[in-house]
Figure 1 (tube, rainbow, N blue to C red):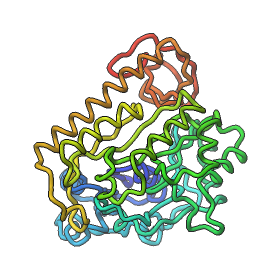
Figure 2 (figure 1 turned 120 degrees about the horizontal axis):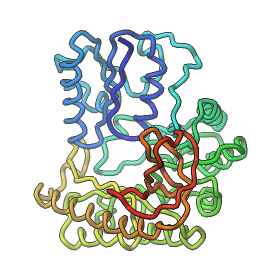
Figure 3 (figure 1 turned 90 degrees about the vertical axis):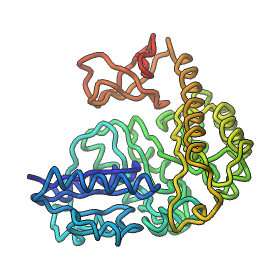
Length: 390
């Protein structure tokens, strides 16, 4: 049986897992768990995946890599189901696997290509363990990134998604410290036939002027900005050691909408961060409507040992759960109202293999049966079915 890669966590992990599948395609009876450690729950899910995989593949060689393999190294290595660990920073190096794959391993064809142009993080958010799992920030050069885009376009990708742990810090470690806008502009110039370029989560305070201009006016850069916001209360943001305040996010979104009214806003929000009182929660809740967040990722706070936030006065678990539910309900309400505004308006949808696709604003659209995956089709939605335009 060929190598199997099981991916948990972020889009960066998903992208790296595709590389691992291609790199290890010739390795028999190997299962790789590409783990996540962003929360305590993520580590629990990693352990579950290890046990479940061992039951399903009792004779396979089971190797764990990813962030949990760094920050929980001793605990995972002690699990009887685990045969070995590969360091996160070396997991894409064939030598770490005693493997000799072809240099131009071809991925399976995908409609959307996730390209990791940045890895690691130099910041010290008090809730986050990821710098310990990913190391310092490091960037692909422009040339390396262009080669990756070229490889994916040759494989038929209709959309390129740039990803990273802290994507907007791309270039800070390169000569001249270029901003992410330089890379985006370079990709668009080098590949005039690339129809769609999308960006994963952005730290709004790091969006450079060139990147802002491209987000605000370039048709091939999708009108969809997902902010690493985390909270709507200034005191909590300071205790998180975030580098922005509420007013910074409000100003950014207002400026983007002034130039590109159709832009859709997403955000990461944490519920129940330590010391969060009712007033802070209300501020977190209200920023959803103020920014018009229609793509929300809500995370109930989960303490990570070794982080400063784990030593702060905690919010009771039941309150965290109820506040997370309130945030999700507010996002759902905002999203439902937004979807209504899209009815009767033509959408250019990139078809995927499950019979749905994404519009430029990342609204998910139900497609007619038989629509070929990878093609971009025009759909004028007339109704909303289970959260999808149709």
